[in-house]
Length: 451
Image (cartoon, rainbow, N blue to C red; front, side, top):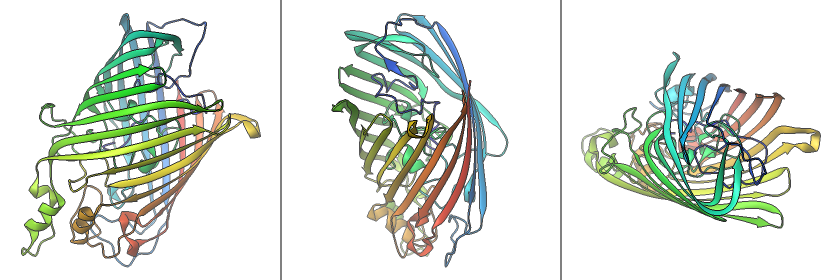
């Protein structure tokens, strides 16, 4: 997220593509309906507990920021309240207080494809409370079909036009608006691994809790959506404090989405372009500065105003009434250090989601997905020379290999508002290091409650 993609409680059934998906966050089913009820206010809450156990594995050496070869356990617990109110026509205000506690694997070192989207970079084993979100959403209706949106977390029951312009101002996480994937967006109900909850190479602006401040505009016109936004970068890489000089240091994002149908089955394609300007180091500068000193390169010692550009494309398609698939690809110009998300420079991921209609459990969801993540040449050379990144640092990287992840989960609906999800992950080449190939096996259990 910076640390996590703090997710929202989303509808995990394979509902039809949501015409208002993109307004942060819009979990409720959306439909043309004779129901035109609009809420003046609402309140929702969620709590999620994730426990994970990692088996031990063999490796010829371990560096200062390697994944431990010993068996380990990790856990996270979050509580979020969602409060919304409507004070004027088209205007919605939301405030989300949140509490988090957690323990990562290996002090959060050794993986780029980190195992739990709920873990935070600045988390700890003592509960911490903060305001996760506070934002204004203003909708300007422009005509077209009338759409009714049901009540949900950060979504008042509302009526919108299919053609409209939406402005969001305040504190959010960027995955509330951009690359809001139907099947792989929410670690509280879907896939847990960081490489599967959004574009792996998207170093999106965020503090260490994955939240940022700024503004976005979304223009909806029938089957097309264009989104653009500018948000604050942290003052230091993976830091807790945002840099409020948004006109000097910022993350800019542009996304174009097109919804389509194959027969009667909905799907969509999104293209994302981002550019970050921040106080960041260049890997080649760090290597050059360390030459002749006998010391490993240190990217934090060569920071200066720097820009990073990246791209992502994603595809979603319903194959039947109960089966959906997704595919993502992303890459970034990562001569510049990872600043707010994770150490992935290019990534390909995809998966399938099936609800339980076929076995008479229509509220259950089974998912399986893969990710293969890689590093650019400059990033590999930096780690090979003994440099330390935000998460990685085996002390050497003699045999580079892509970091591969396979994850599967089953979301079991116990009763209304309560879900239990066993989760299993296999990770090869942690830290992109073929000498420490693994495989690494991680077994998890997630409990999710919604109010």
